[in-house]
Image 1 (cartoon, helix red, strand yellow):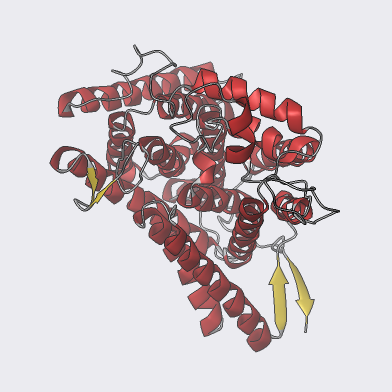
Image 2: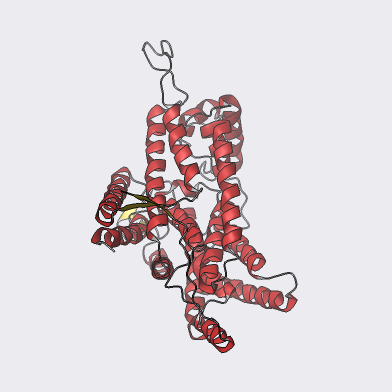
Amino acid sequence: MSWANRLAFFLICGTIIFTTLAYGTVHQPIIALFYVIVSSILILWAIDGFLSGTIRFSRSILQIPLLAAAAYGAIQIIPFGNAGEISGLSGIPRTISLDPFATQVSALHFFALLIFFSASLVYIDSAARLRKVVAVIAIFGFVYSFFAILQSFLSPGKIYGIYEARFAVPFGSFVNRHNFAAYMEMTMALPLGLLFAGAVNKDKRLLYLTAIALMGVALLLSGSRGGLVALLSEIILLLILTTGTKRRGKLFLKVGFSGLLIAAIVFGSIYIGGESSLTRLAETAASEDITTDRGHIWSVTLKVIKENMPFGAGLGALGVAYTPFDNYSGTERVEQAHNDYLQVAADAGIVGIIISAFFLFWLFREGLKAAKTDNIYRRGVAIGAFAGCFGILVHSIFDFVLHTTAISVLFITLIALMVASRSRYKDDVEAVDAIRRKRSSGSTPTSISKVRRGSFKV
């Protein structure tokens, strides 16, 4: 294993933490730094290939939707003819995108995420590294949730006591509380998956439960109703994936455990105090604040979709396409549809719908297959990662959480973990209890086979 290999894996783990702490990586200077990190990973990938004599790559089909999105964004900014004279200006190129610059930036962002995703698929190449990534996400989620709860009381209006977000309610290091809730949904999912799959040793279960409960309390205190719905969806999916129809006793046990866990989270949020998702359930979906009036935003977005079919208004161009159909005062600019599914249709039209449908189909296909892997630990990781992705997909009905870099980075990392969980490794190790059972039956707890990755000899 070369130094470039180890450094690339370190950067992948570090990126998960950095993008979160840097205000979710939504400001242009920080996004530029994210691109520098991704470029560094790509260079290290090339150096590792040179040193080892083999360029490794993943054959996962889930890379195709990201590549297709980046490619279609590039197509949307290709000029074909001129748009005629506009406000006294002539020679303006006609493009599919109504905002070519925003589309160009979006296409570049998709390409950067593709590189990060592909590198993650390649460098999570052993059971030890799989465990390290899971540990980084779970431990960081626990520490980060503790920090967010403290900040919500000590400095509720300012991030790190320094940065004050305007026109939004910050939580943790995120400018928007819904983004924080989405992040917690994913960090909670991995330890939940391990618990539901029975991959956690008895002496560590209390530690896992404590971490999950704290992250759940932080999620509720963020006040995100979409986050609460997504969390419940995660737990329901975990119950479905880990309990067979013939095991009623096990089903009742897990349902009871889930109820106690939810009750503990609710009690914890009430005990700590402050506004939470529960106190906001009495509010209506409409509000005088344009950023939360989803009913109006969705209705205008549907008009944008109808007007710009079949090719879409352009990736990232909703802010321009939205304005002509908005009957509000226009004092506040709407750039996101607060529903990622509607925004895909608005930005990319039929092409975007096809790409997204293919991605969702293949994600569920891979998730269901990974949930059946024979290794207990990898099955727990796969189930947790799949549930975390599912939670984000549910949350995306109400918000635009995947437009935040930190969330998209963790989302594709969970997908990489899910894909990696289907592979078998030489250093595979079952849970201690499973090892004892297998030893008593005379079988070996480890299994060796080829890793499902491709390689190209230099």
